[in-house]
Length: 200
Image (cartoon, rainbow, N blue to C red; front, top):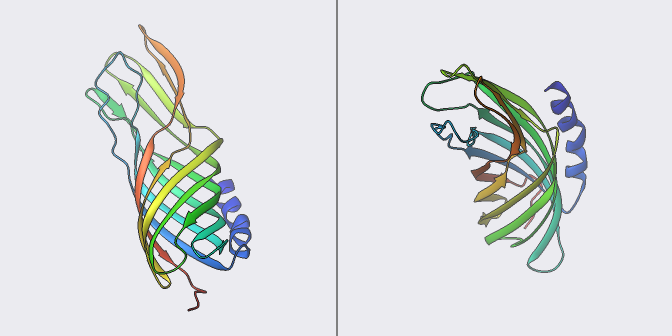
């Protein structure tokens, strides 16, 4: 985890040096952890709520189209829920680095699409009444994609964002069953943005 925080600190100046405007975005994340009561199906829906802090540097291509680069630091809880499941509380930390293209440069409605890669770490373990035990671990290098829409007023913005989480590797062993596979969850978050160097 310390390496991920160090990478975030080192990459932050890169995002802020790009473009005409810098934006700092705080995003409370909503992630609903599902009940894994079907013992015949691999566990899923383990990514919970959290928070994301992003920095984006962007510039206008024309009157209404913007491009830029950004990076973020994301934290989500990890837990396996279900009947007769005993899970510890884990965490998922990731650093997405991405390109961004969108519409809406000043006051009014904006939209944006982001794509890139992310570094990730974190894990969670669980056991069940069948004598089984499992582990979910974040893959260290992942693709990243997000779609956002919202409203901007001068240096402030407010919006909604849907993003993919890092890929998770799940392993489970019991006397009667075992599996190994990879999957990804999705999250929804609000976005509160602020442009410290905004000029009319």
